[in-house]
Amino acid sequence: MKTVLLNSNHEMPVLGLGTWQGKADQVKTAILHAFAVGYRHIDCAYVYGNEDEIGEALQEALGPGKDLKREEIFVTSKLWNCKHHSEDVEGACRKSLAQLKLDYLDLYLIHWPYAFARGDVDFPKTETGEMHYDVVDYRETWRAMEKLVSAGLVRSIGLSNFNARQIDEIVASSTIKPAVLQVECHPYLPQTRLLAHCQEFHIVMTAYSPLGAPNRGWKMDNERVLLLEPKVVAIAQRHSRSVAQVLLRCLMQRDITAIPKSVTASRIEENAKIFDFELSKDEMAELKSLDCGCRYVEPLIEVDGKKVPRDAGHADYPFNEPY
Ligand SMILES: NC(=O)c1ccc[n+]([C@@H]2O[C@H](COP(=O)([O-])OP(=O)(O)OC[C@H]3O[C@@H](n4cnc5c(N)ncnc54)[C@H](OP(=O)(O)O)[C@@H]3O)[C@@H](O)[C@H]2O)c1
Image 1 (cartoon, rainbow, N blue to C red):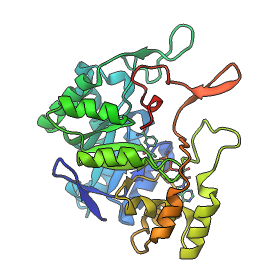
Image 2: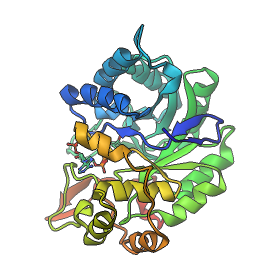
Image 3: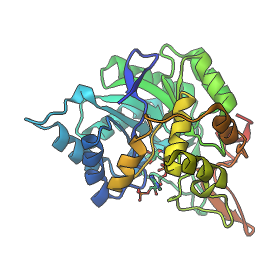
Image 4: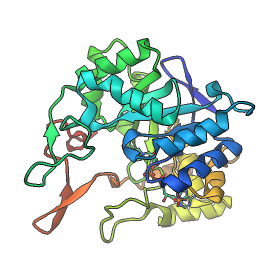
C-alpha cells in the first residue's frame, strides 16, 4: 500500500478502512478481509462504539505466528467531545488503546473542535433535552495531546473537523504541529482552500465520507446522492470503473488520503483498486466543477419544522466560517 510521509516523520498508508457505523458483528470480518487484500490503515474512533470488536480483529491479525506485525499497520483513533479537559485526555486515549488491544496508536485526532459536557455520557443532554455543551480551549486539549506523544502512547497527533482559523491557533501555540487534518471531502465539497492551507504547514488531509456517507442517519429529503452523480457515472463508465473508484482516485490525484468505509468484502476490494488507472486533466476539472458546498456530515435537528445543524450555536463550531 502506497504511503505518505507525515510531518511527524512517520509513514501513513494513503488509503484506509473507515469503521463508523460498522456494526459489532460485521466490523471484525471486514478488517480481517481488508488486511488480507492489502489495507494497512484502519480509521477508528471511541465514539463509534466498536473499538472492542476492532481490537479483536487486530489481536487476531497480529497474534503470535501471524504474518502481520504491529509496525506494518496504521491505526487511528479520536478523542471524543466530552474528554476535551486536559486532565481527561490521557485517560480517554488509554481507554481506546485498551479497547483496541494496542500499546500505541499511530494517530490520535481531536474529533471535533467543540466540547460537550465533561463525563462519560457521549451525547449529554440538559434537563430540557438539548445538547449539553462545554467550552474548553482546544489549545489546552492540544497540549495534553502533545504529552501523549512524549509518553509513547501515540506516534502522531492531528485534528478533525477544524477550520483554517482553528488550525492556525493550534499551530501558533503548539510544540508539535498537527500531522493530519481529517475532514469531509469529495467533489461536492472539495475543500480546495482548506487543502492549500494544510499544505502550507505540511499537514496531510484525509478525506472522510469520500463516497458521500450514503449510510448516515440524518439524510435530507431530495439531497444530492454523490454515488449517483451523472458526471461521475460517465467518467466511471469511460474507465470501466465504479463510481466509488473514480471518487477515491480523484482524491489520490489531489494528494488527499482517504478512508472509505465498507463492511462488504467485494466493496472493500473494489475501493482499494484505484492505483492502476489515471483520471485526465479534463476529468479532474469536471469533477472539480461539481463543487456545491454540499456537506453530508453535519448532524441536524428539527427546529420549527426545519432541519438545522445541531451544534452551529457553539462558539467553536467549525463550519460557520467559509473554510
Ligand atoms: N472525523 C470525523 O468526524 C468523521 C466523520 C465521518 C466519517 N469518518 C470516518 O470516515 C469513514 C468513511 O466515511 P463514512 O463512513 O461517513 O462514509 P463513506 O465511506 O463515504 O461511505 C460509506 C458507505 O458507502 C458504502 N460503500 C462503500 N464502498 C462502496 C462502493 N464501492 N460502492 C457503493 N457503496 C459503497 C458502505 O456500505 P457497506 O459498508 O454496507 O458496504 C457505507 O454505507 C468513516 O467510516 C469514519 O471512519 C470520520
